[in-house]
Length: 329
Image: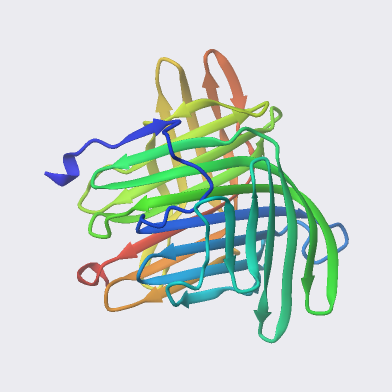
């Protein structure tokens, strides 16, 4: 039976990099920044930029500013763009969509996002400097697979414009490149949370969950990074949904707990979403999907090779849920 196939996480696979892989059905580049801009209305907010390609179907270029108290402050995204709108290169990291682009290579990148929100000019021009090593994984979830190139923490600086006002900003960012295949008949979505500086050790905390249909156990994992290195891999975590919310008729996790105990370490962490967030509901004859992104609170403890860690901190993350027509309410 398909749901009995074993999922595995492969570390440091060959060929997982920043450049385009045009023969893969799904590919995206994602960068965010937790903003420090004292005295401005965007201080403490997050900027999100994505370039997403669903080949031969649709493309998306997100530009978002999300507040922990007010939710979406600006949405200057391009939704359901025609195939071919996003350009990319197999030779170098050079992704573009109209006036938007992501360029560079480890350890430095430049992100430019530009668009309008209700007639208001929105623009972000940011430089990223990696603060940790790049991490490479393949999530082999038969028949799906996803390759992941990620930098869990970078220093960010630049400028953001909303309407007639501009502010210099600094902050902390996350950057990733995903490509591969997700079987829509089996995958029901994913959960992702990231905390760049958890507890007094200021660990980068990264949590991922790949969810499935038909009662198949989700693939849940947590990686911890300290002093520039990812040192703890919890790859068999158990997921418990503590609270749920409903958006567009689809129920999604609002508060979750992940736990794991092994010879190398143990983990017990709870992530609770803040009520203010950005969200979007997409409906089509093929599926209904919801996307929720925003701030959350991380609480918990971990131990690895005999050393204990406090995981408390402010996190940012997203939930994607997809339901097929026969399962829609």
